[in-house]
Length: 551
Image (cartoon, rainbow, N blue to C red; front, side):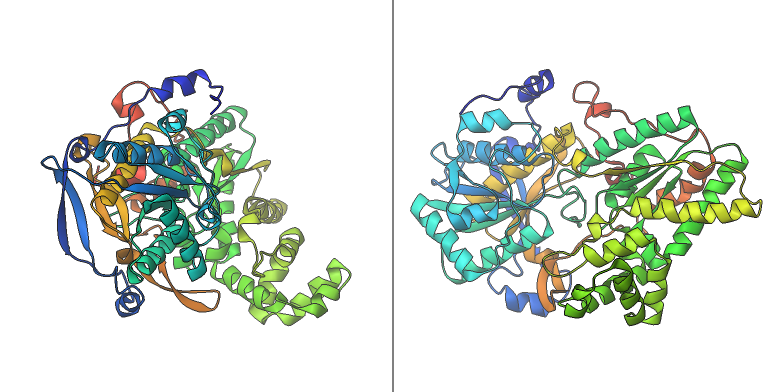
């Protein structure tokens, strides 16, 4: 392959050797715990996964030398990018080669479709070395094809038999690892000798539990976003004339927003899970923002920063009800589609919705209301992630402040700038933490393959300690599953981890947010990710992990 043109930082990072847990540095033995069960719906999950349910937790410990037979593996990058994916592959490659030099690793191209369509390359040392410690998924590409149908499983088995591939590693989020579990069960049920191992990936941070402390990429993405937020806060405190409304990626949970708040200490931070728990309306949220803006204006502080999670709209109970009604109302609605003008469509919707949802719809700015109506995904649902929530809030806050100014309650100036930070963090050069963590996950997957395991997710814990003390092993994917309604049917899925309002990270935030709202000097400026220097600067994990571990 043609060598890449590299920046000085890329060249320096290429020589970085990721750290491994002590248990992975030499020979390994597996210690099995007791049988496990799913987080919920135990009988339903057991019935669906009779061959992979109830398997024990696995922990690696240093052991005696052991000879392993040749086992070739294929790897799939699934879903959206996350910093560190290349190091997972490097860890798998190095682990396989150490366990048996004759092992081979193949990469399926373009995500899960590469397995089905038989598109692959052999990942040689020359290829893998070009991508060590780099961001992105470009070594083999990614995709969002779901592995759900038996014909897909059979096509995968066909290419694996042809290439003598004994195991598949799926690197992905909750849906991708759910598919990995289904695939593992199918092959086990049909006595097809193919193992399936998962690796926890998503910058959103919602694939976590007692055995998976963090999904990879979360650390790097949050550090990238927090640097940008810190830069904006420095600018806000210098210019003293703008309120910055900053929307952050993370549709299903507010982990990114909370972590960035802990790192930068903004004036206002909205947490979707809290808003849902308090049954807040959009008007309630606007009132809370306005209260802070008015208070700061009374002290001559006509500037600030507001962090907003991408999925906020879906967590507002009244908005969630409106979106649900719109999805049902406009699905295959020929009368609506035949209407010619926006006003005609708007009047039709207002007259057809329930009284409660109709009022919510009327209160929305027309641009947002129109967006809820027109932008739909292939399933006919509103594409909530495309809704510019930060601009919606700016418009509604400005309207409320104008009313307060007319009565003399508010005497400040309200100038705004909106931002959305998403793709900026997904392919960044991984932090030292993510470089180490992902390499360890990949190496762990290689050991699980060598030991003949299937239906497991690679697990690396105790990650707030030095890497030597990390605990590597495997967790049965079924242990993380429950039943949820998807597209009108109950399906087994890995349970998403939402922000826990009684958890240490949120409690720390809740304790300090009033101070951050009031003061001029509470801002923290995290600066760019540091790769070289003191350990306490370069290798530190997220604030979320530190607080969860009591540090």
